[in-house]
Amino acid sequence: MNKTVHNPKTLEWQVLSDKHHLAPFSDYKQLKQTGPRIITRADGVYLWDSEGNKILDAMAGLWCVAIGYGRDELAKAASHQMNVLPYYNTFFMTAHPPVLELAKVIAELAPAHMNHVFFTGSGSEANDTMVRMVRHYWAVKGQPEKKVIIGRLNGYHGSTVAGASLGGMKAMHDQGGMIPDIVHIAQPYWFGEGGDMSPDEFGTWAADQLEKKILEIGIDNVAAFVAEPIQGAGGVIIAPDTYWPRIREILAKYDILFTADEVVCGFGRTGEWFGSDYYGISPDFMTIAKGLTSGYIPMGGLIVSDKVAEVLNEGGDFYHGFTYSGHPVSAAVALENIRIIREEKILERVREETAPYLQKRLRELEDHPLVGEIRGLGMLGAIELVKNKHTRERFESNGVGMICRNHCFNNGLIMRAVGETMVIAPPLVISKSEIDELIAKARLCLDLTYEEVLV
Image 1 (cartoon, rainbow, N blue to C red):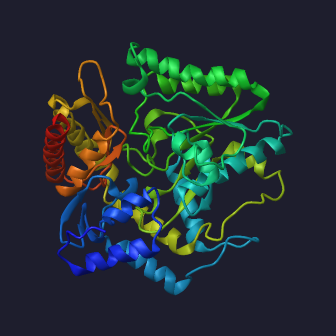
Image 2: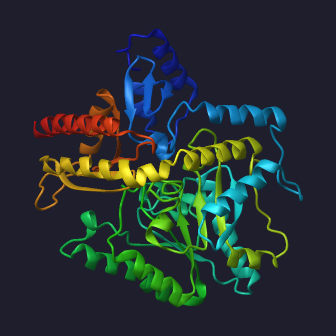
Image 3: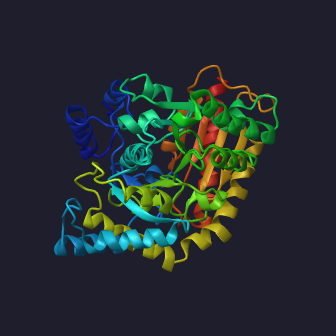
């Protein structure tokens, strides 16, 4: 365990972690050696750990704390709903006001052709629901053989068995339990995989892999394509400009259902309510979570197009749901969160003021000897770490990202390492002065990383 602590409670909590807690996405041997960092409170865009260190959270928790920490309005909304109706299910022809009101509000925000919502407890559950609903849709239409869902390599759609299967992350697949009839195509990652092609050439090539896979599997067997408008956990991968227009053409040509995974992009991350709005794509399904409640309480959902809902209405019972589908407290918090985003004009400020400023300041790091590319959009950004700026050559080992991440942790900044890519997704309410602080700390940590990897 980590003994370099000043607060005795830190060590007590680390011992509890060692004895009783199995953390998600963790190397348990490493965690046992170091102990977790104990986060004790938060406000605005900042966290404090049990040692009293103040940390700028440039990842908004896990891409989710849209309106920042410490909003009393969300706590009051939860408390009020707990006193009125703390829980009831939405099974067996029952409902309650918060879930119905939330469904209406989400339908108002979603693209005009999407007016129905199935609620879940998380984004992973939303993607599980999508798999069941896609296959049920085709079965009701008399085409039960249409089962295959196409995802993308390095895409991320959650860590349940279905979510991990939809995603294209090899490390997750290698740990077993993948479900059949899910296949993957290339991701639109020009910097890492574009070779000698221009970004536009590569974008078209990557999109054409969808058509190639549809024809390989057989049009009568393909049910849907699922993709994030911007890949989040894969490294904030932003497709070249040619990608999404070509994808739209292919989906229309073969009448393939499309699911936009909006768990990261939804509720303002791009400066629009949804990434689908930003790119002008027209999904049949959108999976949501994270920013829906600003992470204050668990909730996810699947927004469904009118076309799909009409078929479901003819299909009898849909044997699917969760104990906490449409939980009244979660719904009340989501409603209040959306009210705040609307009334405080947070998206307008992101779109017109803070996102352009963040992207401008972020690109000032391009002159750093470690930086091969800066990319970003809205309140998302990525910094590619390279050994050679001109050839895009990587370091021989994959440790440079974690080295940089550790320097960030030790210098009051949370940036996430995705392999050799550093990514950010700060709260939507971050100010210009806080963006300045973020960039200054990022440059310091890049300098410290550069000094270390040169040794």
